[in-house]
Image (tube, rainbow, N blue to C red; front, side, top):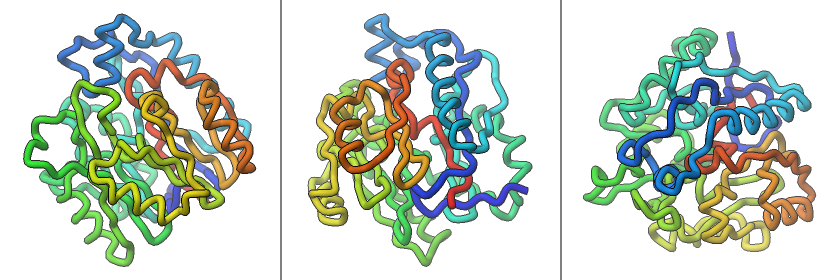
Length: 304
């Protein structure tokens, strides 16, 4: 059996589920896009093609091999986007929670059945149907579980609203010893600069007490200020609007000092190096056009 265990976002990674771009399917129609980034690139004719995405994911696989990380992949479904593994499930402590995702993406869950067979049944949870949640909105940080939500009365109007307060309440019941803190996220179906699709699009904790934060991703400034106070301003890299749209917050930690980042994130990568991080730079700009980057593509299963 696979002894899943996750207590934070940056302890040494041992095992991970990594999405796949194999048989990714045709370019979607504009009306079928789930996020403003995909919509923008469909309408502008710059939506990524499979051969480029496979090249980018292969570069990440090389980094995983370098650090001797066990990698699982989803079962390939023909003509189906399966890149963003983070959305479909997440691990907290020794429990795997299957997300209640957009109905159009349910087949992505079925593609993980071989993995689920390696995890004890009593450690796999599904929340009630009314609890909408995706893994990109869940960040584990020691005694805290940070969850990005949208609780506006117009929730159903936003295809970009993926996690609700009911889900946060259910997670709190599942982990009564932890502190679940919610953050209201800014949502837009069409404006890339005014949408935080998930919490990990505007916030990510790193090792060494550092964090990446984008202020405009939070609907209420008090949430942004709480995070600044929690980490300390000197320990935070403030991500700009343009950098947020390129997914600068969505890099991925292999350990407290080793990170995978997009090779074109010049300002961020320079700051990380100054802070003492080892930055493994990979090409991932084509995949980012679909509204996700490295954290979105990975589902950590075991960290030290």
